[in-house]
Length: 339
Image 1 (cartoon, helix red, strand yellow):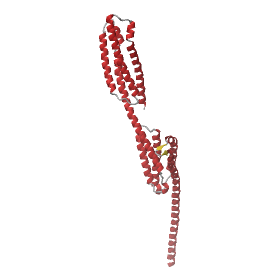
Image 2 (tube, rainbow, N blue to C red; image 1 turned 45 degrees about the vertical axis):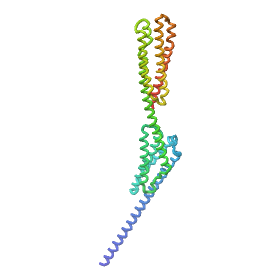
Image 3 (cartoon, rainbow, N blue to C red; image 1 turned 120 degrees about the horizontal axis):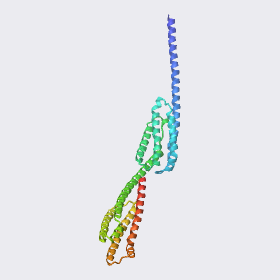
Image 4 (cartoon, rainbow, N blue to C red; image 1 turned 90 degrees about the vertical axis):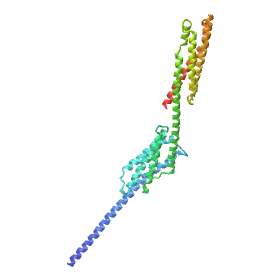
């Protein structure tokens, strides 16, 4: 009986020892596999991180003091972005161990924003005065902050991405570049609006002026005055009326502050209304003279031609200048609308 109990006891002890040995072998093998898996994954990630660090460190060549090399950025950044996207694509196919999953997620989110920084920089440099430049600048700052934040959350040293000071300085230079161009764009937009307002004002004045010019046909009036109504005094009254209307335009014109780009047009219009004033006064004088000479009967074609030579030349000059003025104003308007 004792012999049977002793054998059973030995069997149980041996069985327990065997189980312990098997368990030890299993867990030893498992942990060895896990550690090798961690080591292999860490090594893989470290290789990718090295490539990322190399790309980020290279941006120092695109910056000089407080400026950036726009041409070089436009030329090289598409390739840099493609390289970064390839890294992201390759990493996305990996299946990290559970213990490394959180750091891997931080790394992927950091990389996503890292890529967006390059893409946004390229957009800013390609379209520095875009109407969307303000939002592009806000997005760049947001991507920078998110990128730094996600990279800083990584605990595993093999996953850590370095953002060297040269990289952050480069981003600051891009931000400064964007700020300066936004200010220039805003300034240009103010000038553009001023120019368009000036064009509208000059258009309105030109319409008022040409209405005065086209309202009368003094040549026909004179032909009729020599044989029938209206008489000379009626024509002289019409000229006086036109001079009064012209003076109102002069007053309006004197209140205009021309833009720098519109100064030539403004001066031309001012000379046109002054010339038309001279024409009306010259015509008034010629008609007064004709009226007085008609009483003496001392009128023939030669006398009349000489009498109206000056006003005719003045009117022809006004017409020529006005045609030039309208073309200049139209060109100026089209140029501003195209901006």
